[in-house]
Length: 545
Ligand SMILES: Nc1ncnc2c1ncn2[C@@H]1O[C@H](COP(=O)(O)OP(=O)(O)OP(=O)(O)O)[C@@H](O)[C@H]1O
Image 1 (cartoon, rainbow, N blue to C red):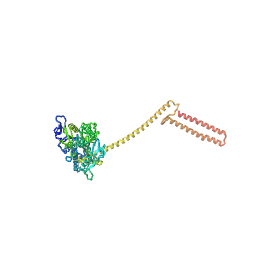
Image 2 (cartoon, helix red, strand yellow; image 1 turned 120 degrees about the vertical axis):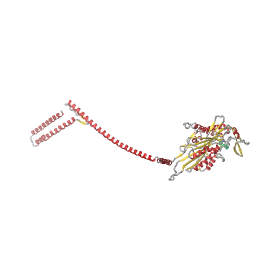
Image 3 (tube, rainbow, N blue to C red; image 1 turned 90 degrees about the horizontal axis):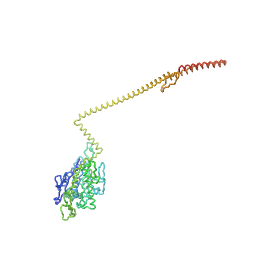
Image 4 (cartoon, rainbow, N blue to C red; image 1 turned 90 degrees about the vertical axis):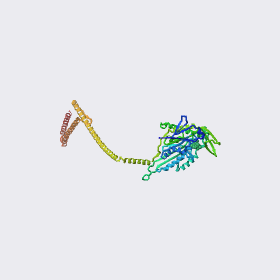
């Protein structure tokens, strides 16, 4: 977790303002004697401080971190005419934070021998809640989007590839010429828009392995935002009307949202899951990652310690100048009370001190890079393993492998045994079922037989067919035998009859004996037939009875 770094820069005062100023500075504190409000910051830069001092205090580290892959944002905040543009852009004699950062950036990159870099720059302004591309002036009213890969970004914004600080500053100059600047009673060159100067830094490791391949394809992409905000202003003070009034109200509205966002964040709203109104203005939406996200952030709060700001605007040989003393040919004279606005700027800055961000390297890993990284990790682990404990560990691993193998074999053997036992049990159960069936059949036969015997005992004269389902009773079998014998007897007698009687009768007729002899023979045959029938009947009754 990284806290937002907040420093205060006071602008020079006129001799009159110096004598009347109620503010006192002591170390890192700024206060009005005998008043409860006392503000403490990371650094306070007095009016004689150079911009380079301001830059070295924190922005220098943020630039160095951006080269290593960490996002960074620095912005100048303060009321109109407090020196924000002076701090961020500077002049040819006193370069501002942006040119210092650009030179530093290229300097650090040149010293980085193991990485190769690709730098891009963009420059945009937020004017009346519209985003304009300062590098391509016809690109106006751009929209903000959000994606997983790019996070929050401005669609259609030109990103120029740059190779030297001079090229960057030249492009910046070009952009400046398209920025909205206007004259107000407070500032001849008052910024009427917020500007965001952005450097996008891409880098990859260029050390090669033995095969000549890059050792890692991971690409680091970080963004460095250097923001010059428009200043809060009171219409009464600036004398704004018409277009200036409209601009002023948009500026104030977006700064108010910035104040609300900082207030919410300082109260821990984001950690508690409460709503933070980033989307209420284009400025806070674009700065969202810097305010409550993944960025090293620094705020330079520009203030004037004047009680009565006696700002004299005059024109010398056609050029407007901001002077610290009264000129005889002054055009505009505004006498204002600054102390309240300074207090409100300091309140904003001290709230920002309580905001923390979660900063991490932005690295994009390709599949090949992931693979290489994992291989590298495996190699490192293997090397560690082969270190001091390698022999002991090797033996232990061998033992563990043997134990594992034996356990596997034992498990397989037990599984086979179990299978065989299951089969045997199934066979045994099948046999048991068959035996049970046989026993059941036999017992049913015994029952039938017993029942028939008892029935015969009580009803000897009656014979009844006894049929037991699924089996023949003894009685049925006996009856079958009797019938068989009777039929055989009948056939035997018929044989006798045929062979004896009929043969003799026919012989008598054919040998032309007399008819009485034939009739006699027929009678004899009939008699024999009767005898046979009687015999058969007696036989049947004996068997059945
Ligand atoms: N530390 C300083 N030393 C010398 N001159 C300064 C300093 N700070 C501001 N000035 C002068 O004060 C004037 C107003 O400064 P500047 O334009 O930077 O204010 P600003 O805060 O950007 O105003 P605005 O919000 O209206 O754009 C400029 O002429 C600038 O040169």
